[in-house]
Amino acid sequence: MTAQTELSSRRAWTAIGRAGGRHRLLLIATCVALVLAAVGDEATGYDGPGPFIYPAVAVLVALVPWRFTPLLAAAMSIFFIYGGLAAGEFAVRLLQPYHTLDFAAGWLQMLSFVAAAIFAVAAVVYARRR
Image 1 (tube, rainbow, N blue to C red):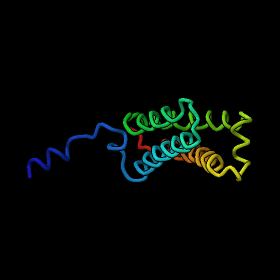
Image 2: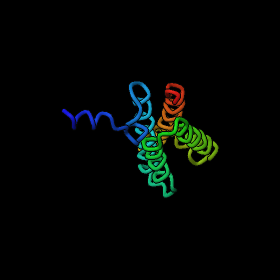
Image 3: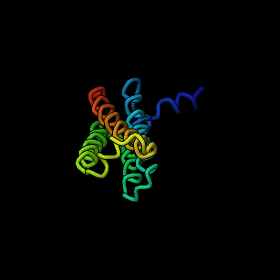
Image 4: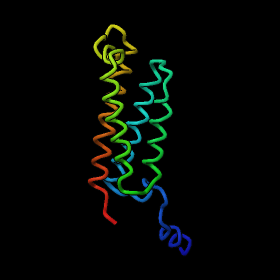
């Protein structure tokens, strides 16, 4: 019984470990959305750094216990959404459903970024102030 009390009294060192309830769920959803964005980016065979950046930001969101860390994911998502829509080559992929893989991967990536930004902002709003 003493060991259980000692384990429960120790504080988790990760952001997800410290979070509880809705805040934890929003942090996990942010990380999953960023991983899905990486899958969508990699599915098209694009050779940019995106599939490495998105999971790296997801790891930061999961591990760094600072309240405003998820805003990094929101800012990154907004920049990549803007960059994707500003690039004609990528924007055309979103409008051509007859190229099934590119179409699905492009929409998966864009919707994942939108979801990650929304979940990240909500996680900051619901975070308990310490």
